[in-house]
Figure 1 (cartoon, helix red, strand yellow):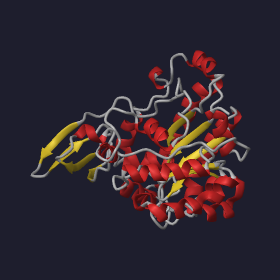
Figure 2 (cartoon, one colour):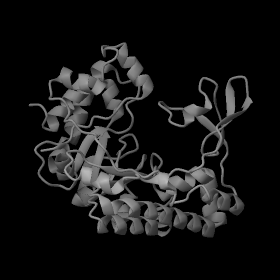
Figure 3 (cartoon, rainbow, N blue to C red):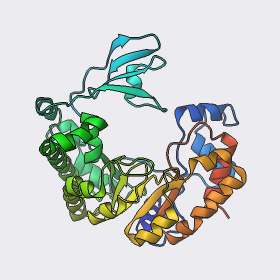
Length: 375
């Protein structure tokens, strides 16, 4: 099977020859540590790992893909507002004003390669006037937002061997970017009509972009980022999720299904057990990363939701850092769900720097065995 066939067969509860091998990737500091622990300088860690554990190289792939650029245009100016003794007060490209360690610079927030702690001071939308100005940065008819050669790109992708995915921010994630988490929570109480207006705008904006690309290609997955749960509970209730976010999910689901997209995937850290029924209700049929430390048990989720929900990730990063019998027990814990289908196992977040290179090899060897890549 090709990587694409294997991905679709797995996530749709079919009969793959092997489950996709997707162990997860390292943070920048993790990779730096690995270079001192046996991973040679200048080599691709994933290719070298496969060689070390004795499985075949990855299939050639990763050719042209489908994308939409849904971020704001123009961006805000990145600048340092104030230099303090051990920190900087900066404005990032999204218009947030925050305080960060002076070990970093403002551009590091654009694509942070590790965990960056920051103190939020001000977010770009605090009023209706701010919102009206913000909307001007999201013109769906800007020609740079979708591939200029979309019809030709669709023809090039017709016989691809790799899966294609479009990734966008979900409504909860995007409103949090504009308002900040505290600001969003307060606005649910103080001005729910404005919250609905912002969600409606984002729903229609993303819908417009999707309709510019989906007629030209057979996309495999539509993936949204939400991150809407704490360790034990969702950030908003299931009822609020259904009421405020459900119409957005439903509209996007109708669009992608009408264009043959088989997988609607949502990413949310934290405990998601009480959110999954709502997601299923509105057409979402896959989720990740199934963080174990937040109380997500992949076996319990499978028993509760059956084949209505597929999963990715779900391996406890803490077990990876302990190795030995702990990681062997962790892999044994998830193996029945791997055999059951609808599950691509991997690290339940970015691989942290307390996972050593020998521990990574040990984990990947075990993962290769339960996914059919190694006997």
